[in-house]
Length: 577
Image (cartoon, rainbow, N blue to C red; front, side):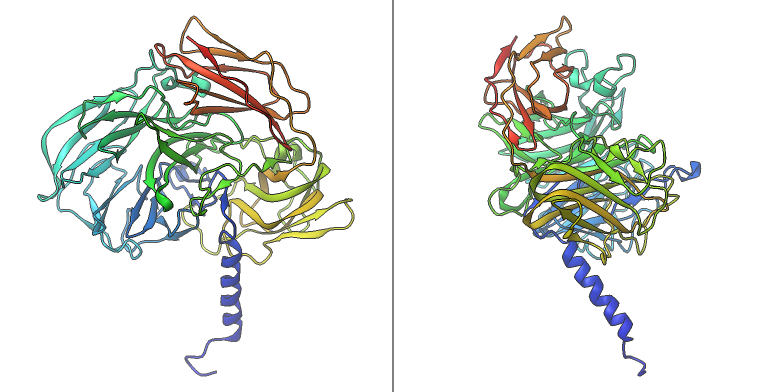
């Protein structure tokens, strides 16, 4: 063979990789949280032989019409043209241990700046070619920074904000951009947690640990309509109630005022929880998006994933996100008209009968339909003979699927090469005759939270997952989620809806009468009937202890029920002083 001629097998492999990429690239207009990225295996706990992949603290920024996402300890970063399809960049120069709680800032589309040295002492990095990643460092070092956030205003004045502590507040200082970003003036203390007033800032799962102080961290400044919105995270990244609040000011260094509708990014219920330590970016079609961290927290507390929610500023200048049904399919940032809207595709697989090829005794197959990311099915072997069959019990229209693979004793660390998931999804009306729904048997993509939107809906009663190749030593799946439309009736609106504010005004007991034939309920609340910006998705139960209220704030509440056929009419909102 001539020296420069490619081997035919190499050409065939290359073509297969291209076809595989096109299969993986988002065909439709929807996405589903957690976002399916080729997350990096962490080295942070490798000295303890704890293996897990994670993505957290996303800093998403637009630069020259495209988007870059910097994520804690990822050994690089992601790039996208539409905020929907992401590819990983291994830069020429980067932090050896990965960045920690990184931040990024676009300065007039000329230079992209990044901060996030794990040591807390850092030079500000910059490049005009992030795709290449030839990062350079300013010849100066800023010390004692954790969770830094660099912001350069329209007038060219630069500022550094930081904070990650259960003691110290969010702080800021002006920098001289034209003199190596050296500090100007004194450090300003902007604000700290006030858990005695703001219930959502209390530490613990469901804000239940009253002994330990919550952490304030992850500042991110967004300028909108000449106002400065300083976002911050609390009370702890491993909890279901991890979220982002916001203070508003007329100046970057304050004084700042607490927003009455806090928290602004909050997802305590549903399949996967948490919506904290995020960043806000203006996406396609001038729609804002908030990217944040979700808690998996099985192998270790810091095992996390990335989520994204549409973000808005109302007529009174209040910032808020829409996390309602936040881990169901929504229209993606690249969708022309409906970006961020809920598709209305319901969960068809919840607690439905399941069969499998095998299972390790203590890791039940029922875990794949329980809407709990912390439980998982573990197969006895990791080979092509493993399968899962879900009986939806009725013929339904299938629109999308999500397969959440779990790391069980993976013994993997850092970025992985030649890492890919392969499987087939089949459907059947009778459980005997099967037809193809999705074929990823030749994929070269690493899809730990695989989301597949079908080109057109398929009618089926039975759905089968057939394993072809799982790149981890063990085949484990936390949930196999099937979305679409059932053919039954909508559930009724819950009756006897009642909210009782506790003596501790940060808490409220929410109760309602069970609705026949429903899967769960979506509780909404806010500071006025037209500002019910927060929500909590609960399954099966008919009561909720809410502990995220502010002492001096009046609230309004409503409720709706849902099942695989859709969502009921929302109840009239009720006020609670």
